[in-house]
Structures are given as structure tokens and as C-alpha cells.
Amino acid sequence: MSYSTTIPFAPELLGPLKAVAGPPGQPPILKEGIQDRRDLTEPFSAPENVFKDPHLVHEDTTIPGPDGNTIEVTIVKKKDQAPGLRPGIFYLHGGGLILGKRTFLLQSTFPWIKELDTVLITPEYRLAPENQHPAMVEDCYAALKWVVENTSKLGIDPNKLMIAGHSAGGGLAAGTTLLARDRKLPVKLCAQLLCYPMLDDRRITVSSRQFDDVGTWKGNLNDLAWSCVLDGKKDREDVIYAAPARATDLSGLPTTWIDVGAAEPFRDEDVAYATKLWECGVQTELHVWAGAFHGYDLFAPESEVAAAGHAARMSWLKRVLDYSPPVTVTVTAAL
Image (tube, rainbow, N blue to C red; front, top):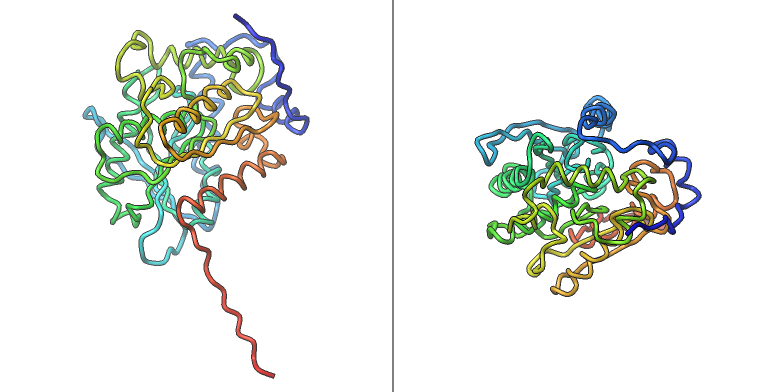
């Protein structure tokens, strides 16, 4: 069954949407065209374009992977940090599991680091179609386990370690969190921040069919991505770690943030996941932004809806990380 696009985009987002997605009616991307799409995203991952903030420093290192491979990891923190432990954010990049690098649009996380004085760690997980499930989630879990084993060296408070991701990175964050629960990772994550996460390979919701030909992440591209990741593996028991929407038991997961645009394919699967979390007793905050397309905050950062999204996320982060701003004492001389 097909659906017409009945949810309009916010007027302030029409310009950025056209600039990023182009006009409707373009031919769908095929497997052979993935590399061309990767080349287009390269400037958004290039370190010289990403790491321009003078208040931050970053370090690259290599850690052992799950299959005898190695995983490159980038650590970002404030310059001249004071001694002591601080919150940690384990961050996973977006790109539909077929595009992007660990530094892809990483600037979107920099306000979290600067305002909350956190340490952010992001791994280079393997992509499809060169690799299939469970390579991606196993890389993410191995990197998270490394962080847990090295919290002291990284300057992270193990009681304030959370996971986060945008789009496919949000889906991977949800899958990695499930894997950490099921494998009984020694340190329990304190929270998961899932920004318009990619959660369901089945395309059974209304919104997954409403945006086949419009938007920044079209339905046909979503089909291509999932076919690259799960080709021939959709009936495996462990598929829930790739497509967490298939999981029936979400109990025991950390407090969760989910936000999504009302005018994008992942709307309904994200709302359903939030509902399932509530059903399983998990404290969850859900925001559905009217008229917002997929990645609205990344591609239209000056828009009012992006400002609202950033503010709401920061408020939630401060609450779950028990953030206390520095106290300024003003001394007034006696007259």
C-alpha cells in the first residue's frame, strides 16, 4: 500500500530541504551509487572542517575490534580541563549504516562537550555493503566495552556514562544498549539519547511509506540501506540489535530521549519505540517536531525548530547527567 505525503514541511525548512535533497522525482540511489554518495558526504567528515573550535581538543587512537580487526576511536574534550572525573558520551554517527565516518557532522555534539564539560568518544564502525550485520553493532559494543574498561584513564565518571547517536547512529545506540544489557556490561549506561533513530527494517509504518520520494532520507534509500545491512539475515534472533524496533522486551534499559520530525520516514517507528519503552517501565522523553524533515537540526541549524530541538536536548542532558552550573559569588563592599 502506498501513501501520499500528507504532512507538510515547515515553511522555514523548505529552503534548506531543497538545498540538501534537491527536487522530487530524482532516480533512486542504487548499490552501485553508494560510493558516489560517500564522496558527497566526505567534506562533512573531514577533520580540517570539523575540528575548528579552539575550546576543544581531540585525540585519535586505535583499539582491538571484535573479529580480529581494529577500531579507530576519536576522543573529544574541552581544552584545559580541570582534574577530576566528568560525564562521558559514547557517540555513534549517522549515515544509514552505509555512509559517513566517525567525524561525520560531529560538530553537532560540541555544545554538549563545552556546556556540560563531558568527554565524548566516537568509534569508526564498519559499514555496509562491505560488511553486514552484526559487524556494525559488534564494533560499537567492543568500543563501548573499551570505554568502560578505561573510564579512569579517560577521566570519565562510570556512573555518568551515556550513549547517543543521530539517525542510523541512534539506531546503533539503541542496539548497542540492548546488547550491553543482554551481555551484562559491568557498567550500566545512565542514559541513551536517540536523535531520530533508524530502528525498523520492515517499513510497515505509515510514515515509512509517506516519504518515498521527498526529504533528506527517502524511503527507497532506506530500503537500500537495510538490504545492504540485513541481506539474508532478517530471520536471525540477533536482528534486534540491528533493528531494535523488532525487540519485544525493552525492560532494564536506561532513561531515554527520542526526538523525530513529523515529516520524515522514521516518525512512526520512533513513536512506537518510545511507547514500547514506557510499556516496559523505562523513563522516556519523546518529542515530535512539527514539519521537521530528517536531520532538520543538522541541515537547518539556524531554524527555529532546530533551536527548540537543541534547547530541549540540552535541558534533558543536564537533568540526566545531574549537571550543576558553576556558582558565581558576588561580593558587595559595605558602604
